[in-house]
Image (cartoon, helix red, strand yellow):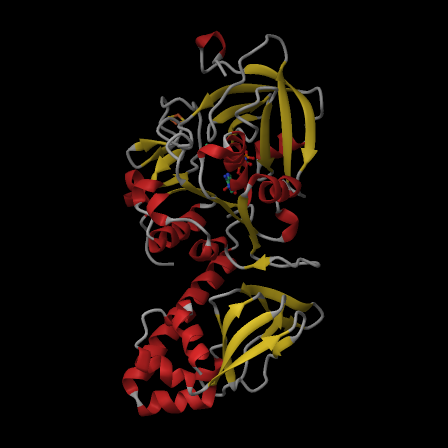
Length: 279
Length: 153
Ligand SMILES: Cc1cc2nc3c(=O)[nH]c(=O)nc-3n(C[C@H](O)[C@H](O)[C@H](O)COP(=O)(O)OP(=O)(O)OC[C@H]3O[C@@H](n4cnc5c(N)ncnc54)[C@H](O)[C@@H]3O)c2cc1C
Ligand code: FES
């Protein structure tokens, strides 16, 4: 997507075309430019700054298909002021959009390799474009594994699509929940535990992980135990943002800026920032 | 016996174990099968065995008054079910139910404890492997308790 007027600080007006409730606290919006025809292309892993008029602006990953440029798709979880206000918007309402920003997932480098995708909670939203890209180029990738963990069965995002990934696209998909409720018959336990028995060749695999930072720390350890080297592990990080383009310093993560050097980082570049005491 | 020995030698939990140690376990082991739905152990009952899961899925749950059973973990192929046989009072700490047909190797707890006592090198190896499982389960439980996916996670 081109930054309008060449000015990345100026939000473009987009109209909400569709809203879909994914779970109790998470919803997906599809956006269309309200005036001009625009290039909506993006790379998997990039994000937009969404401006809810009169309330505030937040970074939200693009969760649609990078191979289709019909609309901008964002899946958002309600946590605070801006996301709550966004939840109240209706079809036809306007949203300001700046972007796309950020360093994407290394989908090109993953070609010819096994791919291990690990998502926790809302972290599936930024990973879904990678899955879409892989599906569109399935022959270019070897074994593809998706490990997805959520809090409870009712927090699982995109359940229908997940089934298709497994059935139609040869993506080995394992879903687990931290707490089983209702008649859930699937796996119970933390997502990090799935790494040990996932079907991939550590010598020729590239891993991409997105979720809460604690989850990713333990995920990285499990990947290392399996023998994947740090250079083949990528993680997506989150920090509060303002400008989104490396000017304000709000999103600083050590010497890196999450908005411009991330949100996707190769693990060896930020390993020192991930290191924390044993919990 | 030979097949039991082979199954045990191939089980991930016993990876790189000395053949003579595997033989010691074989002396306390037998093949077992649980059809889907069957209860394998009940919280509070005597933990006189543990199991090497060869095939199938086991659900671990705890009974909560007024809430019924809460599933806390799923175990699969290559996992070990049960560590309560190691420590007094040798009672199961949770319920385990076969989610699918289970093929496993059952090991008599008292038999193995006696062997650990008589051969400390063997006992140390067994304890080290079980400690690793306990540490991993503790880590997983901590992550579950942290509730990392909650809105404040
Ligand atoms: C690069 C990037 C991509 C992102 N992509 C997505 C996405 O695709 N979908 C999505 O839902 N969110 C995404 N986020 C997170 C999103 O930006 C925040 O949830 C949002 O800014 C919160 O704004 P708010 O005003 O609603 O909450 P605030 O009022 O700022 O915060 C309210 C409460 O929520 C907590 N909180 C704030 N942010 C988070 C968070 N990220 N996780 C958990 N708790 C939080 C705060 O600590 C506070 O307690 C992304 C963040 C970054 C940096
Ligand atoms: S948000 Fe301003 S520098 Fe990253």
